[in-house]
Image 1 (cartoon, rainbow, N blue to C red):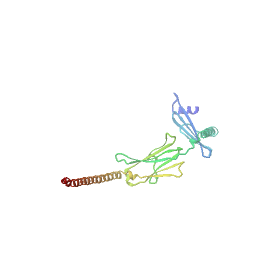
Image 2 (image 1 turned 135 degrees about the vertical axis):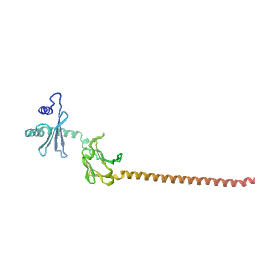
Image 3 (image 1 turned 180 degrees about the horizontal axis):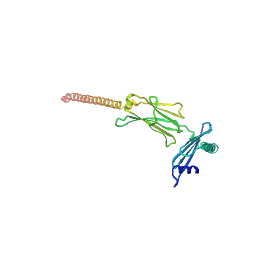
Image 4 (image 1 turned 120 degrees about the vertical axis):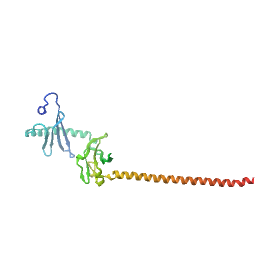
Length: 266
């Protein structure tokens, strides 16, 4: 690390002051308890300078060096260190962690899916979002399709895997659908793959329901129906009150008429 620090200081023209060089290793354990990839990342003063991965099964090391020399001898040296030092230590720690926290780490929780529609102001179209939340483990594959074709990443917002407060994770991907696409009747759907799903989950957006024209027509129709019902109710109440009033008047007349002869007899 000292040799690399000297080289990076000269390369970046940072010879004075305090500098920070960082190195982190990570490994994975496969389902059959066999070691998977071992990865290493290097950074100097907060900037990434190298990335390496060692594949135990292929006995091969892949490198991505941004700054610094990397000859065959250095590559062979790093391969020997990864194979005999870093990976055995990392796998040993990982197995111990899995043994202690097995119930928490090995649990499986299926994702819950929500489809969200949001009308944009000034006739800019419709934003549709596919949200998967509450799943564990964190690995998930969420894809948006337009007429059967995957939507390009540069048209999608979101996509980061974020933690929930209960130890599960969530991911949201959003896409803006223009008014032209709404009127063309294009089909949009969201597909999801997760360890706890037996099959690929495919959900279709019904964007027609969110079309501005159809929404306006739906609101107008609802208002008209409400007004018609209100008029019918008011008319029925008026007729009932009139009948009720006339009924009371006739009963009173009959009562007065029957009492008249009695008073005459007296």
